[in-house]
Image 1 (cartoon, rainbow, N blue to C red):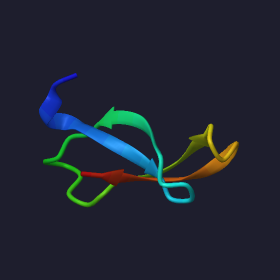
Image 2 (cartoon, helix red, strand yellow):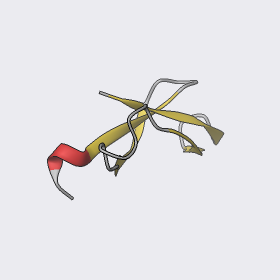
Image 3 (cartoon, one colour):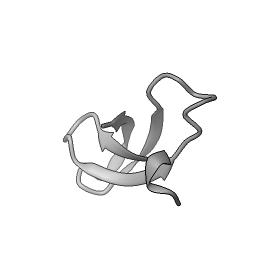
Image 4 (cartoon, helix red, strand yellow):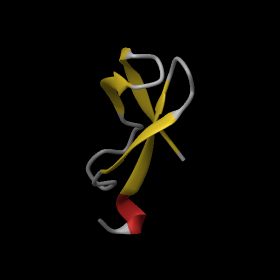
Length: 51
């Protein structure tokens, strides 16, 4: 993956960065929000894109 398309996904409950992903910034302008599993919270929570 190229570094310019990399994004960090942060848990909204415990604020830990659990996942790294990539997105096409030309197509998706707003911040990404995905429901994923957080190992710290031990449940599925919303993960938002951070800087």
